[in-house]
Image: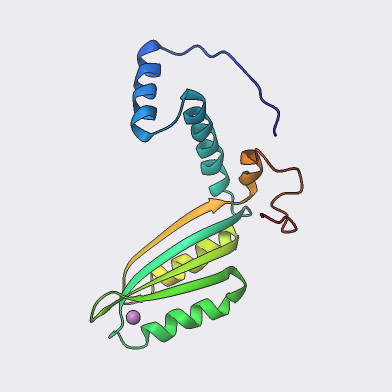
Length: 156
Ligand code: NI
């Protein structure tokens, strides 16, 4: 269990009330949990701007498979950087459209680069990348010891 710090904060009453209302609506158990989440998000946001950060990313791309060569091109681009493509899932949405979801993991700049290449490929209709810094997970490690997230750890 991580060491816990308790601290007093001075905040305008109206702001706290608005925050508490929102926290309740979102389903947080208490103010501390809501505040923790905000802090992690702030750290996360900062880490996401670091090109050298280790990140995981979920990239989804929608395209029309009748578009000549696009499927091949998208596959080719993924092969070029196969070390950061953990897995991909292809769903035939309807007669024309395909959804391809890729789980990426690696340096932020490499993940962004692949996402840019795939999403700007001619014929791609929609693309979305959600990245999460892996480096900041250490700040969320409540119940595990220092060795967690090194790859040697077993979650039973
Ligand atoms: Ni398809």
